[in-house]
Length: 258
Ligand code: 13P
Image 1 (tube, rainbow, N blue to C red):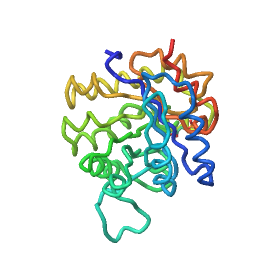
Image 2: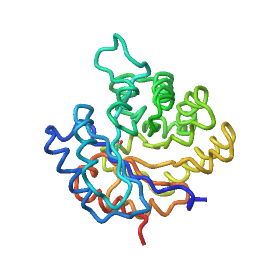
Image 3: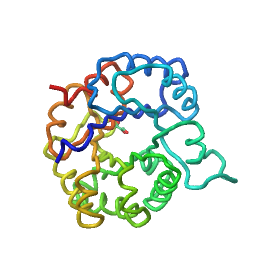
């Protein structure tokens, strides 16, 4: 069924670069690159740069689908929530995507499965597509808890969104032990978890959602390891951190190209 799922490559810039000119240069280089027209590319610059980045991208003519994403969003429309931005603000700014539940949000900023689910639902309700991130720590993997941890994170979202909402969700499986460590999951490890996530969606949402939802892998993805991972039947793309700031991101966007 992979043919029906558009290959998706996200670049999570995290808190980089530290100038707008740096963000603009990354977008310029990508938009001018020869990337698979069948791929969908989405980059997530820091919040401060979302508006100029989207306005600048709108002036460019990439030969592939290229969108801008937020890295996080709050679950309320407006109010006394210092430091947060709302889905409605993203809509007003012309931003089409947001990440939710990135492991750095969960671990450093104490987002929980429930608050991530609330953020995810609020974004979807406002018409923002979501790259919803899940994944286990090394201790959890070694304790044979990978699937129970991932399923608990997905269940919180399953509980609050409708079946039709899943058309606007991409699940990013990012094992915490692989993020920023240079220790990529093997294609067998990643395929195994992706396959089980799909089975979970099938049992708990619907067979259609399980077949249609893109499940992408993140954690030390590079030009050197992306091609093999991209051959796995349940891996529909990548969420890339460090390498999204480098020229090799173009090769990752082309991982499925013959
Ligand atoms: P790295 O690609 O730097 O390991 O980061 C992955 C990630 O966290 C993407 O969201």
